[in-house]
Length: 530
Image (cartoon, rainbow, N blue to C red; front, side, top):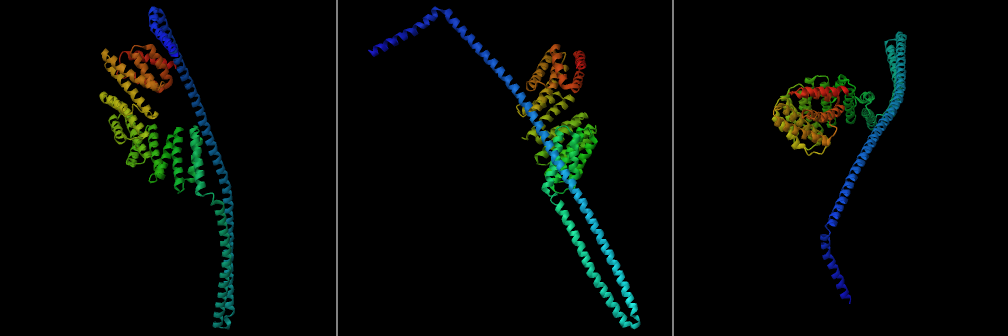
């Protein structure tokens, strides 16, 4: 019975499934409606997902912005607390130093008084010595009448007695003086010996230095300068390495603070002091300050338009530390070569600049260290610009492509910044090439399109890159899109200011075409409105 019932159920189910396709065929409108309904629901789901993704992205961006602001606020509070703590420690040191100075003055006064007492003792002893000599002479004269033998015997005994008395009492008096002096010296050691122990000295000097650094981060450079002066004044003659290191750092950072205060000549003097005091040092921590001082000396000389002297400073870094193996010194050499090349470029000595850039690539092109990778990427871009200025466009293109091949996939922000420079420079190079082939419509269009690709890629990474926005605005204007050009140029000049405006004027005056005159009118109008 059960088997029969199960068989009937299965038969009915099979007949139902077989009948379903005939029902759908018999009613095609129903099938179409069902499909449309599913597609509509699928579209709604996809739309809801897209809205949810966008809302999530916006919430995450807002949350990230808040977190960044909170982090900046926290960092500022930490720096303020560091400065406050360092200031308190320095103030305590000043108070302790003042108290110790008073004690020292009092002890010095005691020493001077004791010295005066000793002088009085010696004077009294001398007077007594003279009196006894006269007394002995008187005795000698008194016994002269009794005979030469008696006189001689009396004189000898008198002199012996005088010398014995003087020796006895002078020894006693001098012993008392030496004991007093020894006690005073013991007091000096007791009061000052512990205060000048290396550990305490190290803590004090670091407190002053950290106070200066914290004040510098808060752009309170004049106060930072005063803190560095305290280090130099109190510990400038120290012989311990840990203290000499802090003095070297204080002198270097003094130069930095003076530079920020636009007191370049005084900054140079501070860097020179680093060289004078520590230029021949062999300790790595001191050599590091020397290379940094030489680099900053070159920068300061450049700001004073003393380019030849700046180049000499960079060459001194290369000659002194060119074979060094320490990472910080290798970084200094790479920076010196790069800065030398940049300075030569500003003097329009492009061939020499390219040679300097080539040395950076030859020495450090395969280095894995981040700071050296960044330096190599930077000089490759600068080399491309120099080649462009010499009219060697094919070589410039090859250099930009080399930079992209080496670092195009880099994720480090500092290296990626140089990649963006390479892309922007490559785009500008292509734009200028388009101006050279302006009468060839097809070539011009292709070159402008290739330039646009480079600019767009930069703006994908950094939407507020002023230089690239300006170049894009120029390209859009030359491409016959003045409205889009206006929007891009307004944004670019708001971000880049006068420096960008001047650069764009130079671009418009290079290899000019008819459209450049109209572009200058638009550019000047935007700048004057801003």
